Image (cartoon, rainbow over all chains, first blue to last red):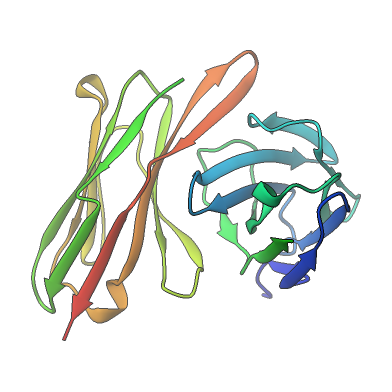
Length: 114
Length: 111
């Protein structure tokens, strides 16, 4: 069974631009969660989608948004990029909703904002 | 919000040695997980352990929820155990699950 895939793997953008990251979960998984990892703030939870609906969210500004499609693939969008948005963005998929379950992580997308 | 502290921040072990990593949290939580991130950035779930003890091979974890701490034991360490170990807790807040990660313990196992 194929693992979680994320595209693109690396991305360079400039301040003020917007970016869309994609995550394809393991086949059959209906939950996709997104995380941001930076040297300064560490790992932070962004949001979780299950059956095309956002079910949980972290404490991020509205510039960070996401969606999930009927095939469970998910996209994350960041608008009006800031330097501090430079990070490794990880997505994870799982069978069930909620944090208390086994999550399978993708390799991440490294975003650099100049 | 809930504070999660991990100790030690850094740890260097000789291959074959044992170690204990600690995770303290400041308030009641309804679940806790341990993760390992290898040197190439890949993150994996190790344990979902809101309370009690679990074992998986050379790794085991214990959470004492009433005293707000969890321990991760690594026995007979191997170089492949190197990386960063995170604990994360979740609590219910306003209809959502609020997830908080610790700052991690960076482990280096040397041959």
